[in-house]
Image (cartoon, rainbow, N blue to C red; front, side, top):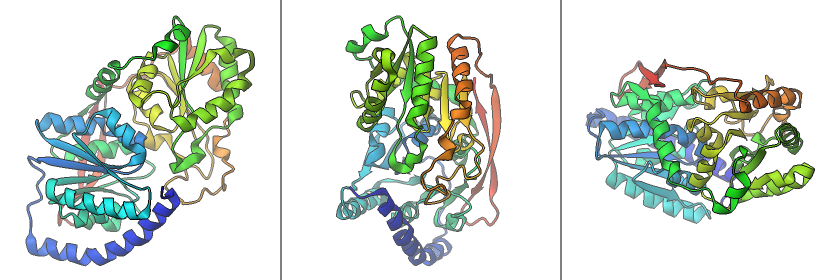
Length: 425
């Protein structure tokens, strides 16, 4: 498999070169053809998201909103193999196409095949890869009539390679931009209960493995998401803090069991931690690598509390309405956590260099991860979790909020302000 760092290098240099080569022709074609780029009655919308199963979960309101306005529309996804299992589990897309990355040759050949497929079938593309140059080139070369893209302060110059672009402020909440995609199609309201109902009904179809039922029957369950993708491995919490958290909660709650969830790689962490729990290790279970994502979500739905780091599971557990605690450092909860009316604890330090992911290729600390050393606040966190388990805290209340995002339209010099109303009831 092609390593992530090499993919980034290819994206930067090859993508940048191709953008310089194609930009003049794109602008010339826009002047000569004067195509109508109104986003009315699309037949086939293709989303492009290569990395990040967590951010993919922010798409629920967008996709469901499009399906509600355009019954019978076809919605597809182009993604990397690393998030394929997320895309399949969500059941949001009619068709999922993957870029094969086992070798450079396969990346090129599969990319070319997808380019021809995109050109022949889509009338709208939505590029969600803010930091990728190659996906910008990819949608441009496919000559799709309407091409929506996300841009930030570093890529503002790429806005004219799309027909429509949405500005992303990297320190503001990303869900606002995802929701604003609907605004481009004339949809001004986002109703979150529709998404929560959808995912709840989706995972309710799954069953917790029967072999585990006796161990969790009549117990309080805390599900754990301890691992993350290699996109930013610095997000992981140190073992000593997991142990402190688990041991303290097990001692205070005799009827409590922990359930590790995740992939095969996360089982390595679970196997490392469990023997160190000591006399309570029989109350620590693991389903890492043994069940699919939807079944993991069923376990979370059944649990009393979820504890995790910045990964897809924390986003999904929150959407399921489960009380949670999440630890942050190299990434920003203010940017990545969609505001929801749930009972939760967000643990984040005011470290000078945080967040660093997406802002620099190499962490300023060179892997020392001061931002994930939450030892000083751990005891307070444990007390807050105990309060929620004892049902002494009530979920926060949210009714609705208004968001505003800058949108760039075809051949308009000044951007328009897209105002969206997000409803929680």
